Amino acid sequence: MSDYDQSKISFSAIKKEDKAKQKPIFTKPLAKYRRVTQIVHVPRVTKCPRCENTSLQDTKRKQDEKIQIDLVFSKNGIRKSVIKYVSPYVRCKSCKSTFKSIEFSGNGRPALYGLGFKVWVVYQRVSMRLPYRSISRMIEDTFNEKMNLSAVMCSLGDVAPAYAVAEEQIIKKLLVSRFLHVDETQVNIDHFNQYIWVITDGKHVVYKFTKTREASFIHDFLSTYKGVLIADFYPGFDSLQCMHQKCLVHIIRDLNNDLWSNPFDDELTKFVHEVKNLFFQIMEGVQKYGLKQRNLSQFYKAVAIFYGNTIDDHSYQSSLCSKYQERFIKYRESLFTFLGQDGIPWHNNPAENALRAIILQLDISRILHESVIADYLTLLSIKQTCKVQKKSFLRFLLSGQQDVDFFKDTKLRKPLRGGRGYGYRPAPE
Image (cartoon, rainbow, N blue to C red; front, top):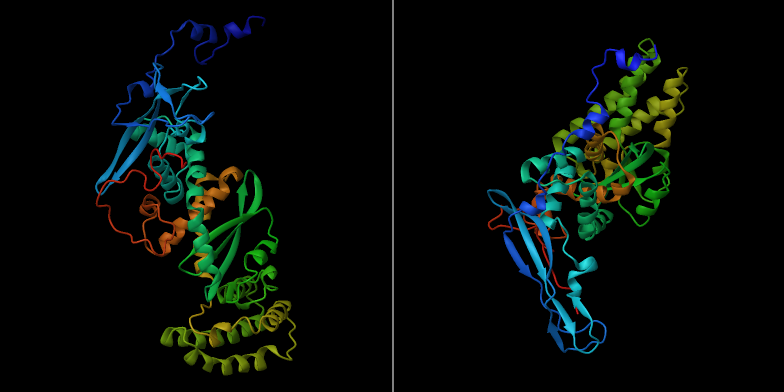
């Protein structure tokens, strides 16, 4: 059996020694074959950065060049633009040093991918929920550019800081809203279970992430809030110094699940029937009058009758009935806050709908990365705010504005190259 490796039947690929004999396949470098559509000459330096002498002269040294790939957005489509930035070298007569434009070096040097290109990548990731590999493959198929996965991920980090003010504007408007919906969900971030929180008032949405489910984050975030907090029965919300409205959908869902699991518990069946009669009356009033305090306040009498007949001074044999009795006693005030104020919802559906964006992304990506999660959530907050206000997330990013409320979503009338901050901008003196 010493010659087994040579005698066995194998359908493996070409042997390594045979591969070494093969000639390497020549691939054309993309940069060499890009057609430049625009040339931008960087302004010549007028003062030496070392000695501050203004007596400068041109040199015979070859000019420094930088290619930037960007996208131009118009009403009818997108086209790729290749811009060449050219920076001349100058020589100081005093200190004899040779240098190029300061704005063309270091952080001021134009990036390979322009803002318009990065915004398009962000749109594919945040709005279309595409995986990074799919975005990279689409870029190669559509624009004939090879953008590696790290560059795709870095696009979020390059774009998000430019819209940090937009997120701050959303948070400011949330903190002065009459009511807020709050919820959280567990997510897989770099193979560890962490939590993403959502805060919304139905017109603005913001997402934040924490490593644990401790309520200290939400306490700090809402430390100055004085409106009505609409949430589930998570105990961490109870100590917040504001009015509360517990989500009635959660308690209805729990009652229905326990009723389904315990069909022979007659006491629970009767208890659920009493709760149903109370909620049915209130929901009929909501459908007829809307969330108006002058119409809904009449149901305080029905709530008092329900507590007198079903909750207060009642002894139940069923452990489930006793559990719900304690819950109704503990949250007596916060279950029916919406009856005494105008326009306060009785459910937490807006927060749960906002969390669906995270859940759908997880179904596709399976895992999120901590290195980009903060930037991703900043952009997702803006995207979801645009969605609930029925505005275009892509056009908002291209506009360069920082307030979604004041953004007028109109169709593009003229081509836009990445909105505000596009291309080369000289550094201020």
